[in-house]
Image 1 (cartoon, helix red, strand yellow):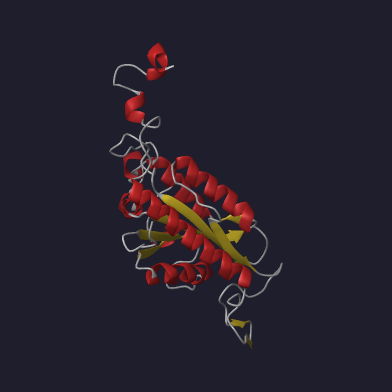
Image 2 (image 1 turned 180 degrees about the horizontal axis):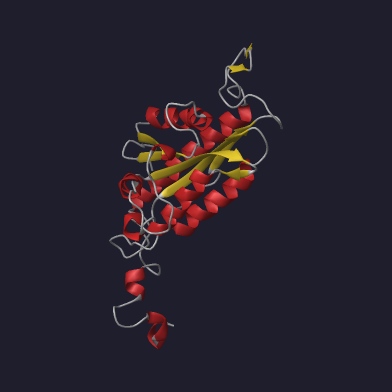
Length: 243
């Protein structure tokens, strides 16, 4: 197996609470992973979720459920077209952002759809996450995000999370070059070996798993196809032949 990633594509969904063009520290940390992928020939796109009119809810198109606007269907088309999804979120009160939770709920809304094998639609796709904040919470937030991704069908490689947190309490965030009226000698966090290593490992593990998935054509449908589970008349678990 060769390490040629040029056939892969990745989408980074930034769940910051700041609308463009405000600075996003999450986007700044995204750049490490994006640079690696672009160097490897991967097609990369970043979407800032809060810039789009995405409705809250757990249905594929919320305009069918009382909302006047919902840009989610168009964003979903970009997500499902990508081999890799990386969710990025700031940490607030020890939790992922409300935008990240909205994204997870909208992914869940699509999880009942199936691919051409009859498997749930995110089968064969690979996911990871990235967190930024000023206090602890990377692993706690990653637990929730990665669990949700695997639950809806994404595959999660080893070391699929990364992040950076500063000291407890008020202070500069990742990538800041000034704090208050003080200029900082170097951008905050750029010299963190822990963050740089974990972001790099996460990126390559996502690429390796996505490459393997693509070469295999995703998962075999044996034993996991919803289409094969139900023949249109009978559920197979009710038939002794399938027990």
